[in-house]
Length: 309
Image 1: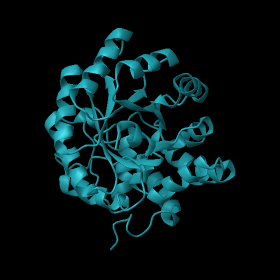
Image 2 (image 1 turned 45 degrees about the vertical axis):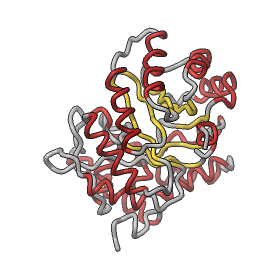
Image 3 (image 1 turned 120 degrees about the vertical axis):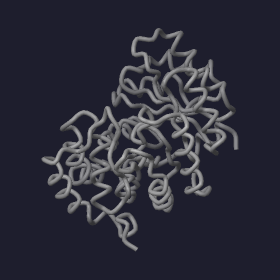
Image 4 (image 1 turned 60 degrees about the vertical axis):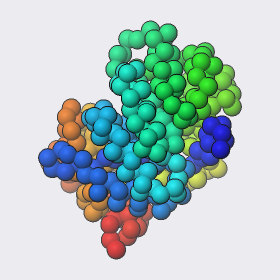
């Protein structure tokens, strides 16, 4: 399969497993394998390993390699695995090579550490990682790493292995302008969160990355199905019942996008554990709201999802 052919398969939902931790903040690789095996029973178009929700920036390069290896083994060829990398050019290159060795099918390149990098430096950063292996890469445009249509086109021209763009800005009109300018050179994904599904599918993405896939794969798939069909009546119903209440809790504290998902997973019997600093665990005052919401989720969480045999 060529890189372009690979990109064309990314349609629907990209699952985004968290990275489980033990209480002492060491990796829980057994728990990761269990979670990934359960997720891979669902028809996601790919799974990410050590991405944003997977807490890439809290992991060492050696730990990233372990997370990718375990994810690849647990997925067992049922879908591609996309490995996260970032930090800076040397570390990003090192992680890229480790991910390749661990069996990843593609790389997700997160922004570098320096928030005021000039355009040429940014392009060199992504190019260095792209040239480190023969794996296709996907750029994750999030937070300060925002790009104009012309800059995205420059990146696509400079990096032959760049095959997909994961938007984390959530600006629908701007994303549409980028898509129109660059065309079908790249596969276009929504990457900010499940709460932006209507925005992303209204502008024409072919897939979105879902943290809800950790607790309710069926819901993630239903959101993507409605989005791809532009069935915004169904989409609004799903968003109002399940997604917006969850994201309202996640917005209470910065960094809760990981902490709250891990708390919900533990409530449902899935290994997740705590988060590493600088993230903080869910506050005791917020736990009752998550527990009440998981009662609402009961009709989209099947027995296998909840860890019940």
